[in-house]
Length: 185
Image (cartoon, rainbow, N blue to C red):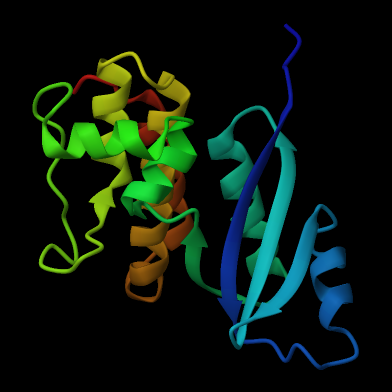
C-alpha cells in the first residue's frame, strides 16, 4: 500500500535557546527541522513548519520531537484552537458575513457560544466546537475537525508537559485517540 504524503503547516513557539548563538539555526537543522523557518517575532522564537507527512497528526508529532531534539522547550502550538470570527472565516473559507450570520443565529441552529473574552468586543470561540458544527452543516471537511482537535491536544500537552511522567508517550496516545475519535461524538 502506497502512502500519500501531503504538506502540513504549523508553528511551535519555543524557548530555552539563545537565538543569537552561532549554532542556533544549525541545532534545528541537525535535529530534523530542515523543513522549518526560524523566526524571531514579538520577542519570541517561532519554528514554522511546512512538513510532508501521511497526515496532520504525524506531521505535528514529528515536528514536536524534532524541536525538542534541538534542545528547545515548546511554549505553544499554532494554529491555536481559540479563534475570532475573522479567523473562523479564514480557516473555513467562508465569508465574514456568513460567520456573523451563524454567530447571530440568523443561519443555522445552535452555533457554539464563545468560550473566552465573552464580555469583550472580540470574543473567542473554540475552533474544535466551531469546526465540528461547520462539518455537521456541510461547510468544512472532517479533516479540519481532526486538525482542530490536534491543535487543542498539543497545546494542552505543552502546558502540562513538565508535570507529566512519560510525557511523550502520553502525547502519542492522545494523538492516536484524537485521530481515531468519531467526528460526531
